[in-house]
Image (cartoon, rainbow, N blue to C red):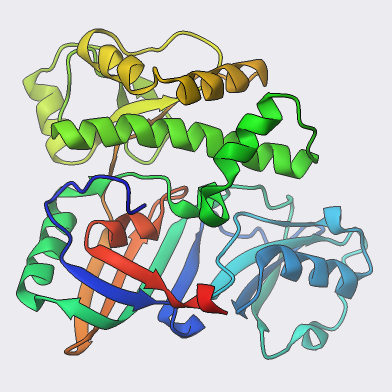
Length: 344
């Protein structure tokens, strides 16, 4: 993400993150209350230094079921302490001993029955607590930047997790589009990376022009907290008020088959940002794969944002983000952070 532009000026800090798993805490916010009945056992699990997929496999082995009987709403970081919900399909409503799941890495916090399988994306968002260590930077300037982010929001970047180690997912997607065969799970990941890269290009162009949170002629609007869009329609006092209270956001394309919905200046910017050879190849590959044109909000506003200095060189941040948004987008607006877990 260091190559992406900044919305609020020069970087203010250098720091290390994930010095320990406890320095990167993520709590999944559930999207629904369990019914208390049914044949799907919902488990709220806290994991430390463990991969979501690996925990799902562990649950399948614990229940004596195929891996497809276990589901989760979203994947969580490995080098972190995270809480998230899993579901296990137990048609006879007989759960093995929960105590058998306990380990240094995995703890079951709660369990209850539900009448449906947990679907991917079935979460209200994620709450983060991050600790930045060995921080170098002016504390007063950092405090002001954080207040500005809380008040104005920030660009809604796709984070580096989407692009794989050293950004390798986009080149791999281009190879797939050129005919290289990949597994089904890899295909989905590479399609997402290609789409995300194109979105970030459009967002980068708008950040550079200073209009990532203000409308262009021909703007397509996205309703906050949903995938619903409307427009284009001319700017009005009503739309200006809705924009100011974060009820709506400008948007950019998630590429696929179909015409761009945007028009005029917004469409011209999108087409220009996606006009080089690599972007055209990614566009063609996504269209060939059958994905449909969608949109994503350009702007993100963290909720419940707080920070405190634990020491002169240690800063703790806490905030909540909607589904599909990245904590690294917040860190990007502050400066350069080094992921200490990558040294392992």
